Image (cartoon, rainbow, N blue to C red; front, top):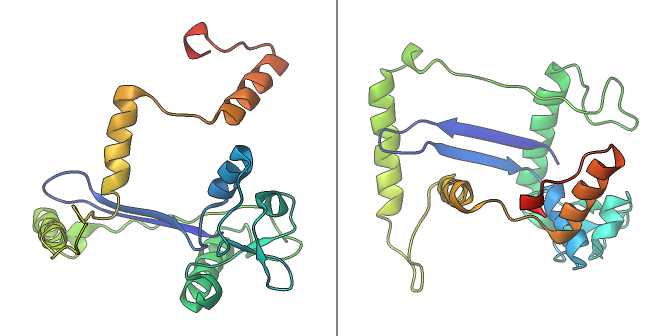
Length: 192
């Protein structure tokens, strides 16, 4: 699942940030369902005949593929994923997705834009701030309390976790402790 991320600074707070996969969900979400012993929704995975797969183990063991953003009608997600693969895989020397990989297993590409080459950075941040305020002021459907800009929920979660800690699935924590013990490192008592 070819991920992509964007960020744009704003004048009044945390930047706009989008970090997403071009598939319906990131592989880690499938692994969380596996760790919890739960099936995945029927629009996440398919088998080689195109049938929905609900068992997360099938993906983790290579017997299922992720659907692109948009699910079974996700031609835009599919196209976006291929473009990310072509740019990041091709330009990074990792190679594009192929079976088998020709050069490496993973590659990435970073593109940074020097804002002042186009516009004064403060003016740019004000433009982005106006965009955020416009989104926040959009009419809300019944039952919707708030409209978020990309990255806002994650920033609020980051702040909560800085204050209260990061929740970890019990099965994941057990694997971490077991791995540490395997190399002679015990988890601190405060974390047990």
